[in-house]
Length: 339
Image 1 (cartoon, rainbow, N blue to C red):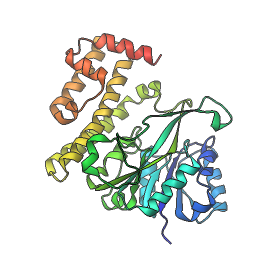
Image 2 (cartoon, helix red, strand yellow; image 1 turned 120 degrees about the vertical axis):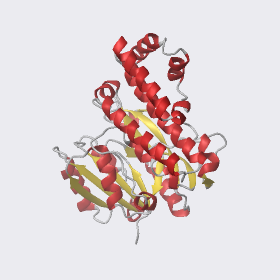
Image 3 (cartoon, one colour; image 1 turned 90 degrees about the vertical axis):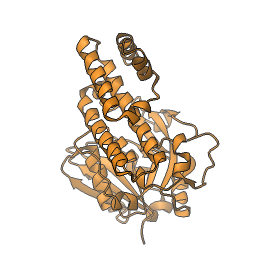
């Protein structure tokens, strides 16, 4: 019997968190519906041994795929390659799912045939408490858009200007990923945006689950979304932006994607651009850094004006309207925020 959902768990040296992740799928009434692919990305700690414990306990549900280290994107690509479920979802090894919400998600996947099923997620702040129930939780968005009707199937293009689906929200049909050879960059951070963007031209329908399924752990030391890590990995941002802009420009040249989807994709890329500018502003301000920022932003305007014009970030807007004269002030404010 075909599984309804493949969960891919990209795993690299995650022994401290992996049990929380894998335990969250051990729901007796769902085990026959799930395929859990633990992608052991060259871990040198005890991650592989922990994963094998679950394979031994639930051989029809859990599977370990061990490979050379290739980064988060490589884990996603490997998961897509081996997935057999009707739907596909990525849950990082340091994150987990909430039981009752996850049950409702799987029920929806059985009942619906939408190309994307979107559910909520919490930012969960891990400050070292032993009990996860003590972690502070925060909703990024309480509802996906105003007047949403949950469990209703929408035509994606009709609401594309009202939504933004992140990796933590998204459960997508595996067939879309396989048929269109969806791949993201490997040996690179911040490829989540590639993963949520590249399937969009092929998506026709979407529905929304009210529950908050995904628990996105924040606050752990060394996390790639910390400002220090983002500074260190700035070239990864450049690589992802180049890939996304190239993808967008090809869509425009080939004219095979609806205007609504192109606008949606341009808005996603504009968010990544705003993140890149935030990184550039987080360094101590000087003439060279200002020139680099100006060159980057003006280059974007020349090479992909659609993305340039889709910016909604207020700091980026102030910089541009002032012809970058507010650079020193904005740099100071960003550094104060992330001190």
